[in-house]
Image 1 (spheres, rainbow, N blue to C red):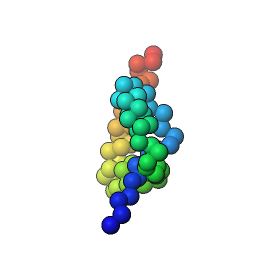
Image 2: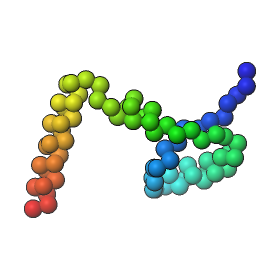
Image 3: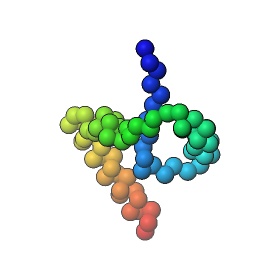
Length: 75
């Protein structure tokens, strides 16, 4: 069995901070030995999509509440 060396990436991600900096430094050392695979479509459809109607309702309620708080804070 041949070991495939792949790492999932999100190409449009521009993360900043100590963890992101350390990851880039560590990944830079091995990046020539691995294939980068864009996981954005899979992440979007599997993790970020609405699973059922109840989840959608909770999301809209939370989103609405957050928006109201944001407007109140800006006044």
